[in-house]
Amino acid sequence: MTINVLFAAKSERWETYEQPLRKALADAGLDARLSMDIPPAEVDYIVYAPNSDLQDFTPYTRAKAVLNLWAGVENVVGNDTLKIPLARMVDPGLTKGMVEWVTGHVMRYHLGLDTDITRSDARWEPRTPPLAQERSVVMLGLGALGSAAAKLLANIGFQVTGWSRSPREVAGVTCLHGEEGLKQALGRAEIAVLLLPDTPATENTLNRETLALMPRGAFIINPGRGPLIDDDALIEALDSGQIAHATLDVFRTEPLPQDHPYWAHPGVTVTPHIAAETRATTAAQSVAENIRRGESGEAFLNLVDRDLGY
Image (cartoon, rainbow, N blue to C red):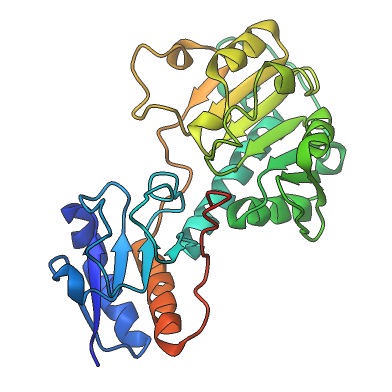
């Protein structure tokens, strides 16, 4: 029996994903009809991007699951018409890209590379950076991305502490959770990396109170979600020297408005949401695997907990 798979995303995404998805479905041994135009009552699975025109899931009475193309689900998880399982995207290609980006910026701060890169005079100032084992890095968020990045940093030799809202275990990483755990983690965060989901419970995780807990002169790297940081509080902390520098890849409004103070602040590096991107080939394989599981009666991978919001 043919499986009807609706691709519900922007048309430019269809051009990128059509062939990888067709190949991944065939490689998985699935007889699938993949299209952007299937009558709702005939759809078995929805491959979905939250910015698509499909916002009412009520007519999709036969659908078994919505398979998100994005790692973030904050723009769909609260949809009251969505009653079927929702799987977030955990793409091996995206994970590798995020780990490389995070590691690069952690090493940049650890080695003090900006001192030489931005030098504009002829000063000769030798310095010896600490070894990784002498540097404390804190990973806020221990999902698939945070855990992968934390493991690599620990393998390099950093003292890595991970924090999450609920208990987690990651090999080689000191794992903390809960409100008290957050305070402990930030107290040792010479470099803090934010890879938390965007939920009401994580908004402004870094605010005036929590930024003050960090060692003076700490560094912040945020490739997670813009709302994780109170922007005004961060600018105050940068101006006072409490935070030495912040590299920010995500923002509450994107593109970041041209008049936003982050652009001109000497203590901020702005990158245009480039830390990690879903790769069509590997993402298509993840989608096909979940469809195969659905058809064989196995549990879907990476299901979203509606109560937690991720």
